Image 1: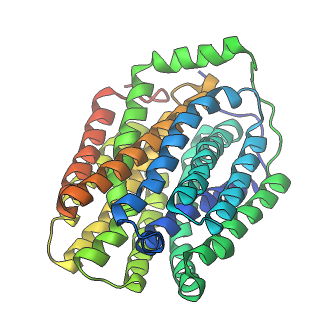
Image 2 (image 1 turned 60 degrees about the vertical axis):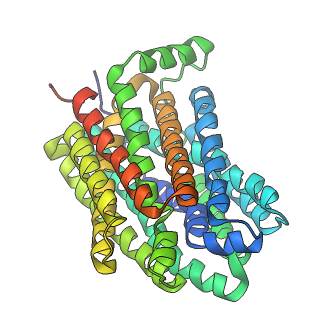
Length: 395
């Protein structure tokens, strides 16, 4: 099977995709850092307010399946622009929300955006870059997502101090998406690809993927490690603010620290995938991340917990680079469908992590959140190792 491409993209190709992923992360940064303030605005419990992300993840998971057919009928560049536009519409709705229900509906549009931006960014990498360059490109995409936290946390914190969480949507989330749309339109070319554009091609892609045990194991493993990561990504700020009585400003610094750890992990992963293989670099870091997540929410020492949190972010990042590189090669003839279904699995993981985490906080404690979600990370590593196959290498 041929894993190479004939033509090289422009030098702005990767930066345009990186900025798009950067923009797609901004709503979750805001909702994670300012979750307590959002809950206070509408006088609801933090666990209830957290379900805004659960709803968005549910929509993203369901719509990602529909993306399987859209991706073979509409150019990835066009779909990517639409996804970024939805982020702007969602921001406008959140800014004007007068009730928790209205906020839930407005924020849920980020689910549609995620279901488009995440798979299309990876699909464009597979369509335009040679095999040896894809892992490095994916590492930069993941770095862009992490840098969104490094840059976004202090900016969102500062804006919210001035005008609350609504102003943060207006002053950060919407502008980032708008700039991304402009760069995508001027920097990403329309690509020539083998695109059947028929119902036969659509169903053939689903049949091939659902009949591929390795592809299914990649999606399951992805869902589990993403679910585990919610213990850090989504509930980390609330954990330190409620358990250790940390300030909002200190929580934002921890977000930056985790993002820098994730950035470092992304760059390390991008360099190690071609050397040690996509399968190994998916499985081992995912298992390690699960162990670390269990520990970070169950150790009473603040500083040890913080170090473990950073290590967990690093391990998850390395696993993400390996798993996305592995998944991208499972069905090269149906990359759009493959990555759309993988995006659905990612949304499922976010749904499981945020939903289960919110329930455990309401009924039990953060300690159990770490134990349960960390266990899912360990399960992810075992599944990758036992069931996945790297088509680019002889097993």
